[in-house]
Length: 297
Image (cartoon, rainbow, N blue to C red; front, side, top):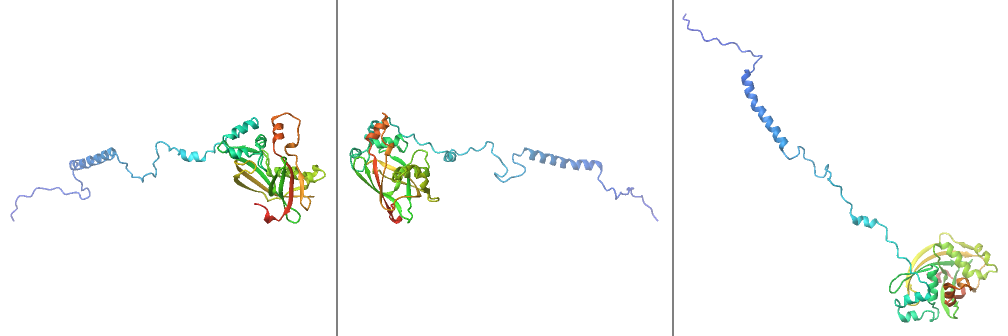
């Protein structure tokens, strides 16, 4: 048997340690390192955030928003009303009114039957019962208490007419009413009005307060705007405060009472005393009982 030259010896491979030679591993890993470094560099240099958030969800403005001045102005309190007009005497009031009222209407004050004069209005202003707006024409504002005196049979007492100091008669046909004093409650004004206008019917006026009872739950308020009957040509705004009351001991038939308006005569020499002497006052009130349905609302 011919034996030729033997083939070169090849060492057996280790199957468990099937790795590349060291130089092959290093050379193949270099591209991966460069790729990873380049990717990190790209991500850090990118201006976009890593995570995209919905707009206006977690972001906050750099400067706080300012509240609208319009909404704040709506909540601001209203400006205070202008101060009431003040006059040293009736003549100064007359001069002020002369350029603000129609001349024919102003001339009828205290002359036309049933009207009052400028002295009455000045006394109302001095006592705080009336205020005048500085306008043309001026507007007279009055708080008035109206008392519906209820009789035992359910009828209502009304003032049919008044007899004035100048001899004229003023038709009324309305429940007892009186101008309110400053800071006076409707109940207080009702007690005072009943004492002043009905007190003379009783033998002793000191116990009139004990005869009066204001009926609970009857108070109401409304506002009326109309021309004044007492002062022609002068617009008026009436805040009417109404209550029901009973007064023990009143006559069951029609009757008449007397009133000393403005506290009667005084010997004190003052502007108020002189104005009272020239004012048109109520001397007598004439009363009658009527059904509630016929009372003027």
